[in-house]
Image (cartoon, rainbow, N blue to C red; front, side):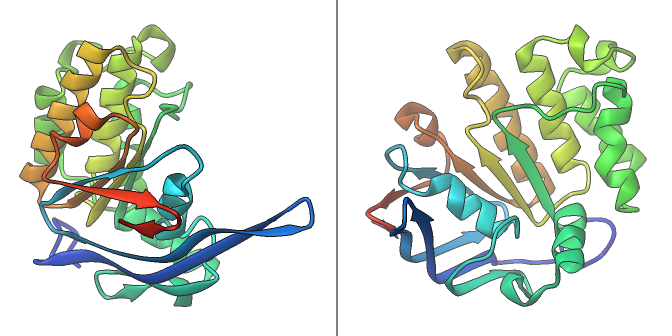
Length: 228
């Protein structure tokens, strides 16, 4: 992959036969029972399902934050389960954008420094793309502010900008609008969709909202441990 943009066309994510169980109160509970999923470059996919269906577990496995019991996860040419802890951390830094319901901004950094944080660490900072993100996300007047001085919608726009600043292969979002009112959620997600299409990365978003899911290119439902 180049330092400038995703170099993959077609699927950037392959999930095949993915299985994951947890032991709770001495009992083995199967959460994922053989999940199959692909996400292509430039495609936005909504992952829906009832609470406890394993949506967040699936995202954590894709991001290499937890290990699967079986199956395969490939991010472009990388088999995630075969990577060391250090290599998975490098993958998250260089190839993945992560956005969560909690904005996870660094309180001691300004908006501008939060936006550039991941791309600078990854050695992928692109001044022109950074400026475009600032403009498209409407952050120009907020660059010198700190996270505590922002509204929830503004903080989430910064979080999305930070995740996209590296031009990742894949953007993973777990209920990214869950803390926002409906109008702000619509606005933030519309910006995210537009910037995903602009950057050419894949986009996989967990959401409970059928209304928001319907705005993405494709919807898949996780039920009884498999993609329905």
